Length: 166
Image (tube, rainbow, N blue to C red; front, side):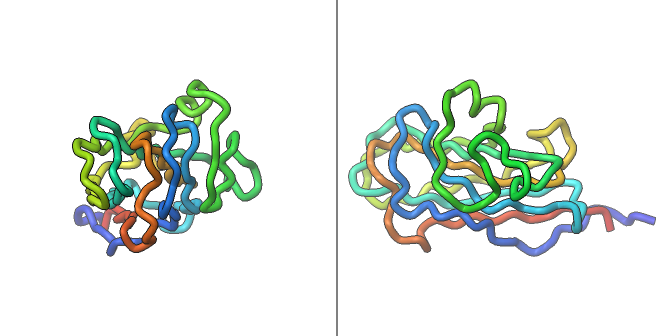
């Protein structure tokens, strides 16, 4: 008998955001490695992160974090440009991006301060997919700050916490 919710320890999400170029349209960005939920069977995953802007970003721009989901591993069947591997990707159009991934969070870059970290508060993956976790999922991050993100890999951190009944 389930006794309540159980949270796992934080798990790293592999996504290399160091020096990620700006994309005015948000179509060019970085995809994370695929996360397989078919073993753990989490009912939700809470994602949070830190993105650090580069030198002299443009104020009033943003960093968008999208979540994609699939019933099949993208290693065998890609979804548009997404293949489940930490890599740079460019969507063909805004319509393709909007139908392939859900916007999970947006960080507003509100100053021109160089190398400033922007924290993303935890958000629910299941909520983005009608309350049900996808079998396979991952992130796609894009920004329009006008400059490349900070070049130090350790200044960009992404983790998720799995949620189950225990």
